[in-house]
Amino acid sequence: HFGWAIEGAMGSEYKIDASYLSANVNLASQLEDAAKFYKVPLLLSGEFCELLSDNMKQITRQIDQVSVEGFERPVELYTVDVIVDGMKAAQSNDISTEETKRQNRDKKKKIKKIFAKGHMSGQLDADKELRYMLSVQNEEFDEVFEMALDAYIEGDWLTAKKKLEVCLEKRENDGPSLSLYNYIEGLDFIAPDEWEGHRPLFK
Image (cartoon, rainbow, N blue to C red; front, side, top):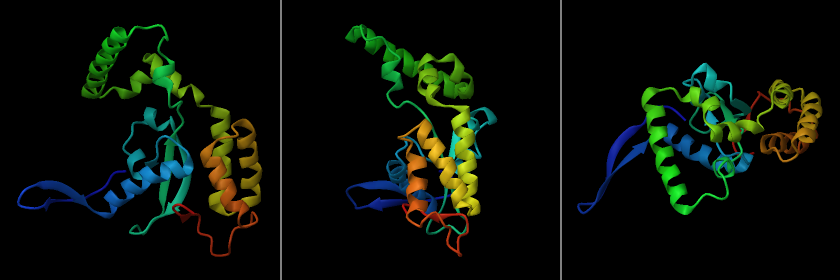
C-alpha cells in the first residue's frame, strides 16, 4: 500500500523504537493478512499500483473492490499471478551447495543493480527466474476474469457467476475467483438492493 503515516518513538528509557501510525499502516497490515484470504502470494492496493510503470501494471490483476474501516472510498485490490516456488524450480537440481551460495550472492548483486537503475520492468523478459514465475499468467484467463469482476461490481451477479465458472474451469484453484464466487453464491447470486460495488474486506 502507499499513503501517509506519522512516525513516533515508542518504548521506555531502556529501549526506544520508531513506530508508524495511520489508517494506511493499518491497511498495509490488513492486506498482508488478506493475501491468505484470497490465496494469493501478493496483494496490492490500487494506490500502490498507480505508482507502477505501465509495463509493471500489465502484470497485475484487479481481483476485488472492498470497503475498509478508516477509508471513505472503496479500496481496489490487485495481485500478481506468479509461481511462488519459481526461483527454486528455475534452478538446476544438480547444482552443488557452494555453487548455489555463489548464485545467490550473484542474484543479490544483480537485484541491487536493477533497483539502482530503476529498470525493473526490463528484467521481466531478461531474467529466466522471473520469466518462469510469470509463466502462469494467461491473457485469455485475465480477460474472462475482468469481465466477471466488472459484472460483480455492477451488480450483474448472474453474469459474474457464469464468467467465474469459466475462470474456475480454466484454473480450478484460483483464489480470487473462488472468493468472489463463494461470496455471491452465499447471497443466491442476487446483488442486494443496497449494493454499491464493494464488500467489506474479509467478507
